[in-house]
Length: 373
Image (cartoon, rainbow, N blue to C red; front, side):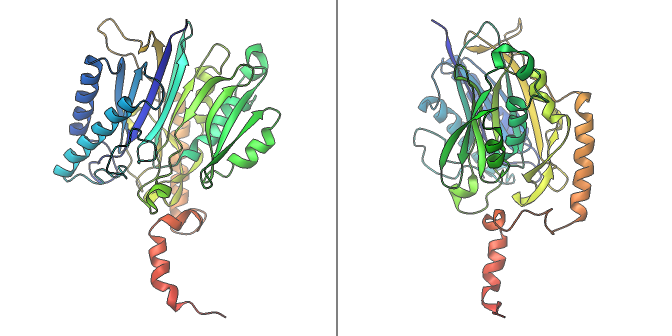
């Protein structure tokens, strides 16, 4: 019987050095300590701890299925401990994403971002995980469309018979909390009609149409809808399977050769260019950005991340490559252009998106001074 393996990527903003900049070393040490202990106790089989900007990322591979209470409690306790350390160090935004106080068996809806995928292992299973900072879940709509529905991006849609039937997209309406499945290529126009509205409609899952093989899973948490106020952007994560009747790793990365605009950036209130970077450059500076994204690649083998001879998981830092220099240059150019506009739309988000920011306090202060014409 094929082995079932679960990949869990859970992130949280627990505190940052020098503003919303980067996760400092003391918080990494806490995460490493807890992950190592969980592995020794057999709760998880392998792990990798990394950051994107001020978000601490826990990548765990195990055999306990999606939404497992023990796995989620491990992540929650790790974030809580790191947040306490951040408070002691007076780091910025300590525990910002921990919007609830009592763990209820699952971190979904409590603040941290979660993407999980349970798979039956194939002879070779390449996985790509993406993590972004200073943006929202809708930032993945465009690349997911291009990866799984655009034949000008993904050659396999044309020349691989195992992909000829296309892919199905689960689209979540984050406002009304309902979803719809759309199949491409037949319903491509309807799909674009929805997911082009990135602030409301989000691609949450993708399956291969011919056999319902799960191909991609993204986090869809909207922090503002949980908290009822602005507490930072959602900083999404995404897991994508590759090769053997699925898009190749190279096809999965093509959408990021050019920068494109995403919602978030400074105070979660502006459009900004997404910049693909290696982990060493995953730190947010200019106007708290530009928004950053990293991509890590690895193989899953016998319920674990494939390791080297010393037992260390082998992780490929996929954006740490001059092939993405053009996107990085574009991101700087777009950022400069947008900042010349200051606080005028469309550099700033629309009034609907601004409802959960401090703009509402300004409007409340002035409401009695508005007069009818």
